[in-house]
Length: 489
Length: 78
Image (cartoon, each protein chain N blue to C red):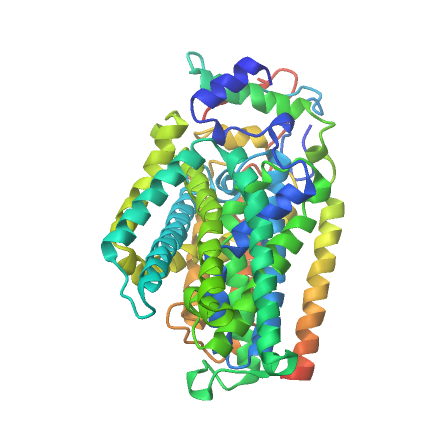
């Protein structure tokens, strides 16, 4: 790419254009590792980890959660990350080959709801965390000043704008501090727990039976596995946005498995789980102060809050990039897109308590489609298309495009997604955590991913392939046929 | 030239390669898109164009490892 073309891209919404070799920012193993660790280990993982002991047996919970995380992340990497790395495009563009040019709007909706939801939750947690620290500075039983929380939220939004407007490179540099910082905090917390309780007592403590979700140990394991897979699956819409900036194939698996799964996710969540079961609260602001004392604990809480800012930046970056899929916004300048992405967070800053009690439900509901989408895109890319899609056809709108299907939507995929969501909710309610008997064997997410993939394969073979929809059965051009494709964003 | 599913690939691997163009009167961003798609197709030697088989093998090992740990845990702790 010439300097001129890069300037054109930079001037008006370059984030949707396919990334070329020279623009791939993650050229070092460590930089990709740190970014993935930061995204995994941000403040929400401490909350998720704090919920693990509720499965009944903390040891089973930690192992099951770790296994679920790894299996879930493998599915996400296969489904979306490797194709995004190859073609330099994000998850939404990758999904167009399977869902249709317009059908991918469903993924866009899911991404916006889930990313804005989690960014809102993290922002609310950070703002209230600062309010909590200030209240405690006066006296231990101090009440949080709500006006201060609003001011902190608004200041954070200003900070997010200043950081995200510079693009992914600035966020990547911040993550080089935030990623290791989170890991050091988790290690220090674990050492403090070991010092205070000893290894045996630390590992064998469980919540009282009446507080556990179940007394069935197999079901306990299934719950933990489900938590791990679900959290990994929440990455589906974002992974394309990161892998399109990855430079080398040799970094495609190690950083996400070590940084994103084992260290950032499973290890951090395990420390939070052990702390929660011993110190009686899943809230990091409470157990860190209880564990490390009022001074060191306050410093550690402050660091957790501070280190969560780059993760929120990443989510806002994903939202602003994804917004360019909406045609009128494709040519909007990057600064305006970032400002637009931050508008919903203004509402969050004014209503942090409401956000924490309601938005987790909305974000969870918005993520439900990604179990089926993961199975569908994986089968479509690796099995039906043999690991190859036509990059330029993702940008050809209209009936002449190979991924137009029926009116721009692959209705086969739409039916499979609807069936997948209904099956998931039949097996398990992610809000109330109620589960059917069949849930105890392998949870709900893994059967839905596998079942959606299988159902999609069979229906596509029966319907779309014989009808030559979705680029199946398209012939290559002959000498006399046109050999140009008209593309548009 | 099409692959075994009949998909047409863009780029110089084709006997008659498909070149991407912007529509007549398109704005600079669409022209940039077309230029990038052609550059991607021409960039056969880039690392991201090589086989993904090593990554698949690595992922398979992680999957096997997690499955073994899960089964062992169920056998011994449940």
